Image (tube, rainbow, N blue to C red):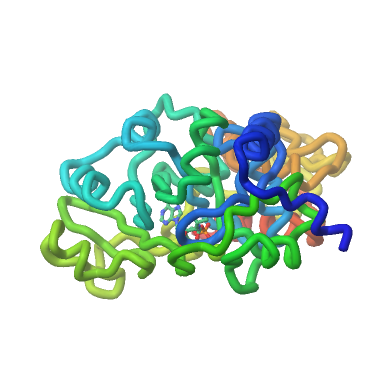
Length: 319
Ligand code: TXA
Ligand code: MG
């Protein structure tokens, strides 16, 4: 099968090659102890957008950023005392911590879906470790499956689902755990379980005391996909706007440009949806300032990544 051609046994040279591809902005799938990840340079907005395009995700859910060790994680996010204890106990391993992004983290905005937090994990799998060391950059990686399909636990699963969408698949055998990582966020000294996974609630409770779920507390962090958790601009957004009203800035796409806008940001002059996804959060932030009365958003095509872009815009327009 042609799609098996880009599977490479994960020896040193294949790992170097995958690292170089990732640094160059391409996608490479790699094994972790939980499931195979679809990896991209987490600092590269366009590469992160390509992850969403490859997965066919109808929404921009925030992605997990993989790093080599705790020191690398601390360069990207602010650790409170309990998160630090959890990291020291469970890293490397299948625990993901949601933490406030550091201002100087240099991470893509899309990787956090516009939130001011980032999900970090240090994988234990030796191939993943070697790849992170070789790439020398944080690697954003959701599970390497088409959206809505089952997460892949071997290279052949990745190839079957998305072999034609990745530059390379690093074959590190079957994933030892086979279940996604546990996602935890600490807020006000309390640990909230955002996604159950292979580190159990009881294991976390040994360190954290009680572990709460979203349903347990009204002030708990919302799980992604829910309206409240997403970055919302302060200014009102008007969607499918052919013309701007008085004082409005305009968010354009290709040659669809809201007429009369005070200032225009164009998501993609050439009408490319992956480029538009890469620019979305930065441009919304740029236009979301007091000098304008609102943001008139041009109509965006509904196909491909356009679905996720429109989903995000509808949420941002809802107030
Ligand atoms: O085992 C795993 O975690 C695998 C391997 C490849 O590491 N990765 C994975 O990534 O499952 P993904 O993108 O499929 O799942 C990311 C999870 C989602 O539940 C997402 O909502 C949550 O992490 N998440 C990511 N960033 C978040 C944030 N800033 N706040 C809250 N939840 C976040
Ligand atoms: Mg997944």
